[in-house]
Image (cartoon, rainbow, N blue to C red; front, side, top):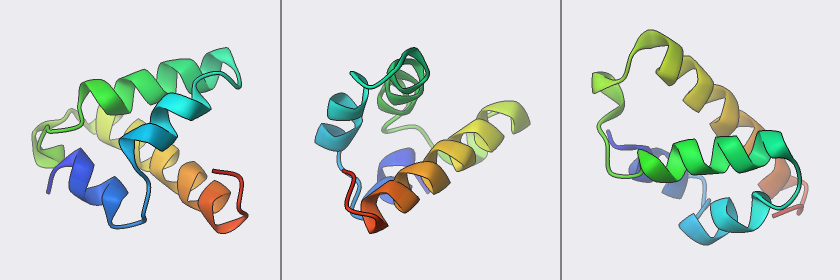
Length: 69
């Protein structure tokens, strides 16, 4: 599965990732990390990268559910 497929399954788009970068330095870094790896296969990431990706994905999914995206 690619990063794109993971995020789009939760209706999180590239546009959402660009928009969120203005909120804080953390979200700027997180958004760029996801976008830089958008077409990358998750299984090929290091354990540390995959863990951070999962954390970002969970946080963004919560934000979408709360209507904050």
